[in-house]
Image (tube, rainbow, N blue to C red; front, side, top):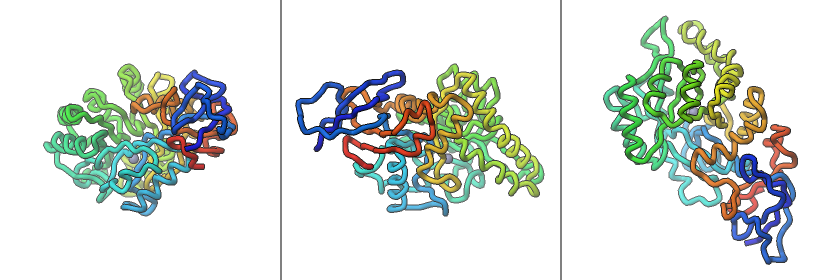
Amino acid sequence: MSAYELTGPILADEDVVVGRAWVVGGRMTYEKPRHTDVVRVDGWVLPGFVDMHCHLSVGPAGLVEGDQIVKHAVIERDAGVLLLRDTGAAGSLDALVGREDLPKVMRSGRFIARPKRYLKGYAVEVEPGHLVAEAATQARASGDWVKIIADWIDRDLGDDADLTPLWADAELADAVAAAHSEGGRVTAHTFATESLDGLLGAGIDSIEHGTGMTAAHMERAAAAGIPVVPTLLQVANFASFAALAEERFPVFAARMQRMYERRYVQVGAMHDAGVTLLVGTDAGTSVAHGDLAREAAEMATCMPAAEVVAAATWRARRFLGAPVLAEGDPADLVLLRVDPREDISALSAPSGIMMRGLPVL
Ligand SMILES: [Zn+2]
């Protein structure tokens, strides 16, 4: 395995900039090795990007399997995403097992929803009363995260159809506790305001979308250190969801339209409230795989670019318990031509990518 000299600067951790580093045996070192035959690599160095919200088993046309799942992982890798959290699978992700050439994937098992209360065919559907057992099952299956759909349109309400919570607060709390006792962590899909007291009260570990969070919810999430993944590329679709629903479900449509219009203000308010924001694309049907840089650019319209870079790298890694670029850490890194804290668009054009010390790009 070749050794490399990184001429830097190396953004090893938030507020840790090092002038030079080496990659030896696939790992980072800040001590000059004795090798004389090191390959010199120029550029700003960051830890591999983290997509906190991604669905590898979902593509533009819907659910996929096997090789297509692998193809999505390759697209993410080639965009510099070397660690991702799959926030809900429709089936098995076993095609990724043992693939050292692919990004590390933290799984969430299958989506958990109620019948008719999520995208058809995507979720394990259980009636109220069965969420607790299913959360434990999915925690065991994923060995990691669990993904609960907390709210969705209730079409049975007819003209009054709107987003409503799927679960009673007490059941949600028991489900989170059950997943925790299996060693899992829990995240939830939430667009609505009405789910958030229940989620925050349950001790949820992270929140997806969070479009319905009020100032009080933001304050609570900030105080508890619960991160939010605002998925702005997905929320940009709310206007089209509203347009499609306008005739049959006017109440729902009006709410989706309001949240669409407020989306940048909402994320800015979360940031100002001190909520930890992490970068997630929600890649699947309506957002393409490999779009992390575009999501980051959206977030940078609401908060400083340096914070977005942190949210896509060090902060996400720390939250997930993954290494950054400290001495001895695996050399999972991205090379950029300019400092992305000055120009967020730099994230979209890596000049190099290294995974476990091997060049990918
Ligand atoms: Zn999603």
